[in-house]
Image (cartoon, rainbow, N blue to C red; front, side):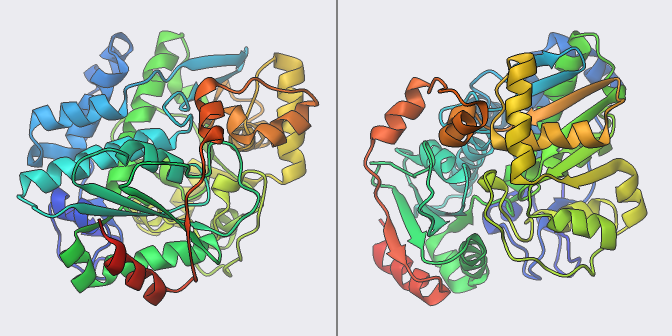
Length: 437
C-alpha cells in the first residue's frame, strides 16, 4: 500500500517511510492512497470476536504486506491490552469507554501503538541508533506516550508542553525513566506543535537523530483508532442496536478520532451520523460553516483542555478524504461548539439523572449529541478520559467528591521533572543535540 501527501506534491512512499518521516517533503500529511474494504462477512461476524482479534484484522488491512503478520499481532496486542467496554448511560445513549489503560485516557491506545510499531519498523530496517520521539501536548497525550515508552530499549521521548500552572492529576508528565524528558515551553500549544513541525522538516537533524513524532500528524496515531470504531460497532450489534441508526458523538481536538471515524465508514463500516463536539475552540465549526477560507483563531483555554487546539492537526486529512467537497462533508458530519458552562451543566445533569460520570471531554460529545441528534434511534459517545483525570472540575460540577483510581493517585504523588525552554525552534534544537541519551 502506498501513502501519499495531502498536499499531493510529494512522491508516494511506503508505510515505513510514512511513519518514520511523519510529514511529507511538501509539508503535507500522509494518507493511504486507497482505503481497503473489509467484507460484510467480517462485520457480521465481529460480535463474536475479541478486541484484539478485531484490532489485528483492521490494522493489518491498513498496514498491508509491508509489515509481517506476527509484528502486526504483537503491536495490536500491546496497544489493545485493556478492556474497552460499551456502557449504557440510559435507554438511548451508550458510552464506548476508551480510558481503561495505564494513564486512563484514550491516548494510551495510539501512544502504545505508535511506540511499538515505530520500534519494530526501525529494527526491521536495520537502524542502529536510538529512535528519538517528539511529542507536543497540552492534554493526555504526554502522560500516555511517557508511559508507553518509559523503559523501552533504544527509544527516547521528548515531550513538549506549554507553560500552564493549571496542571491536573495524571497530566503532569511525572516520570522517573531516564529515556523520558518533559520540556516546558514558555509559550502556547501552537508554539510546541510548531517546534515539532520544524524538527520533523529539518532533514539533517531528523535523519541524523532518527526523529519520529508521536503527534497526531503521524499516520500511526490514526491506524489503531480506526479499529476502535469496528470494535464499537461490534458491541452495538451484540447489544441489538443497528449501528447504521446510531448517531456517534466525538470530542474534537486534533481530530484524530473524528478522522478515524470517516476512514472506518469508507472501509465499509455501517455508521449513523457523526457529530463533532468542539469546545470553545471552534475552528472546525467555523471550517464547516465557512469552508477553508475561514479566519484562524487563537487557542482559548477551557476546562476540556486536551481539546484546546487553534488549528486541528488532522484537518488536512479530513479535507483530503472528502477531496475538498464541503457539501459532502457537511452531509456526513455535524459540528457544534460547547462552552464551559454547558460542559459543567452536562456533567451535573447526566450524573444526577443517570448516575453516570462524564469527564469534560466526553461531556462535550454528550452535549453535542443532545443538541444535534435528539431523535436518533440510539446515540453513542466516544468517552476519552476517566473523570478523575479532571478531578477538581468534575467534583465542582456534581458538588461531591469522586473516587480517584489508585493508579492516578500514585501518579500524582510522583515528583515532576521538567526542563524549561523558550518557545523557539533554535533553542529546542540546541537542547536536543546537546542532551540526546
